Length: 321
Image (cartoon, rainbow, N blue to C red):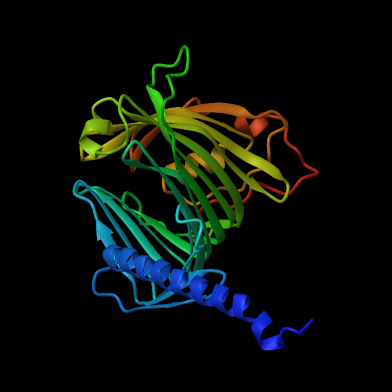
């Protein structure tokens, strides 16, 4: 039999690569169009063939919203998507900056040295649902509109997801869960206070899907199901609370704090420096209520000075100087 030339055996491979390259180019054009729709006026370059599509964007800025104004910006962004996974987008940013403002009084800003994020969305019945948004921000700083205290963390992690088709928790006055936010911070500092470990889990509840602030604010709440502050010697405070919107102007909050450092917690809520305090052997439970920036603390025992303490452990950390 006549031997087939070697070059001829490579023809299927070359054709396959050419077809895949043509398909990848089409996917890349669609990806570029999507990003340019997100970031009008941005200069976008696409690379990553053959395994992924990576968009490199200089100085991206995204802004939107009406009652709730959201802004995201960075010095540079790298946006990745797999050819067969259009629902998942992975984003890396340098010097990211995020802000959210509700009305004229509620605001928060977060910035960092770098951030790694992933966004997964799915289409259901013609509507888009956020399955998960996860982000890890390195060397993070934050500001809350109701306090001048600067917040910093070596690492700040957040996970956000939409929850649908759920019913209200039996026995709870709150509505059905509509969204969930999980936060974690390493070496978190309030101003020049000591470094703490921070973790929080929040449920956003309401009668309808979270598509508009005003519709949510009529009946919705934010349920702080858990928030803990710890240092190297253990947990110093655990918080549970309910936050209810007051139209577009504020949030009313009520909840409890279980803590072994009650005087330090009371001082922090009063915007005062932390006192010298030893950890209690048995934690106490405090209550609080008010609006953001003006919270009243109740239940502080009068006999703290005579209660048993853990002398073998370091003193309570300085939450605020």
